[in-house]
Length: 233
Image (cartoon, rainbow, N blue to C red):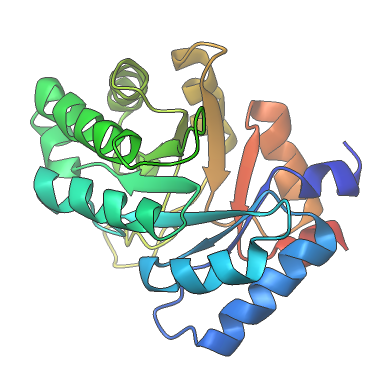
């Protein structure tokens, strides 16, 4: 895949809590220049991005329940609906990982389905569908949990399953930080666990072209990265 083709599947991301309006404007300008699929920003910047990108093909992506996923169903659904009403084209939601560990699959289905319904209920142009991506935070999960989460997400109406927030903190027995982002293994497993109707987004720790292509070859058809410009330059 050539770099210009790769750019078309990158969500150009800035979820830094200290990001300023100037930082987000720079992100949007870069997204237009390189023809990225979207910019992915915190909810507060959705209206600003929408105003900057309305005359371009770049979509506005935002996050819900980010980065921990430990919000109530009502919180996630209402936040998702608000962001869509303000101009978000795509919503990346973090699932409740405690529910995963308790194997409460019906509850996970309910929260994903609630967000799906909330964004679908926002009055938009006819036939326009907001994209819903479900973040699994795979570094915390076993293979069996990843597989089941993927199945539940698809059944609940997700358009993508996504590997990571990039904000997870996981340590070994000596307190050393371990990788918290996308892996080839996780992406391959996710791709096998959903139908061809569902996309796989690899995110977290993808900092160069070679790593991005590795994820594409593993089955990802969307890349989330804050290093988008570096990847395609």
